[in-house]
Length: 421
Image (tube, rainbow, N blue to C red):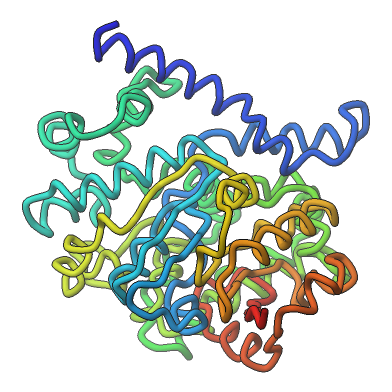
């Protein structure tokens, strides 16, 4: 079979897998298809099977403070959009295994690592992942990147979207407005504009006091509208944030309505940090990074980190697998740190126990485990047997302190566990 033909066949397999991803179904499905919750779960699985996160929504600076990585250490991390795993290697000479259930995220991470390795300079790389709206990127992809990608990754980016356009053209059409999250943010802007509000006004603020004023005038009233409160109380309304039905309940907690939680989290994003230091706010309110790299960026996209990133990109390995599935392939302690993002909010007690059993088996003494939760408190006590969880030290004070500095502002809690053997 020719390389091109093989790429197309593997691409079709990848696309079928993206629509019917058994790994994702195993992670999300808890109820039968005949139940309301079961239908919600399956709708979420369908929605989550394509590109979801063009940018990851966990703050890598907080991660790095928690893990305190040392040269030569090994990190296992959920990949998502790949911003964090690449940021880790700019801060320390470590090896990172980037794991993801979603074939589209795997393809994105492989494209990012290839772009770092093959781009002749920072400006070429930035065309894809900073401006992300450069018509020349498709040409650069064809000549510079495609020959060095595996067949399945090429097939994904050279495959067609619903309108028949190659997916690589996302980077010529504002990449950060693509995918499920990009579409969700765009829909949020449209909804606000329909009601005479403009989220982009947040970017006009001169200081944090001005940020708060604009938020209270421009956006806060949306959360008091009766029909908006009704809409936000439906689990499907937050699928675009990558929040499955099980996590929706954890996020809502004891709040009377979801609108109250979302208003509080968005307020923190809007004025909890100075806009010139918070690239997450630029993504939420501007649907991309500041033009001409004039605003804040993730560490891996900062020009000052380019040479370091390029020299260490070979330290990043991208794997299509679940965390537990990957860890089962090791027979001895291997990792010094684990990054679970918010995936545990999705898990049953059985799945949590299986995951932490593998962490105990594959973790080196002193290894750190970090994760986030929709609610404020750690979800593990009483759900993971003490014979396993009791081998870890949970630093509640440090976890709370670090969580305060998470600029993405969408999570209730940040958590750090340390393996004591």
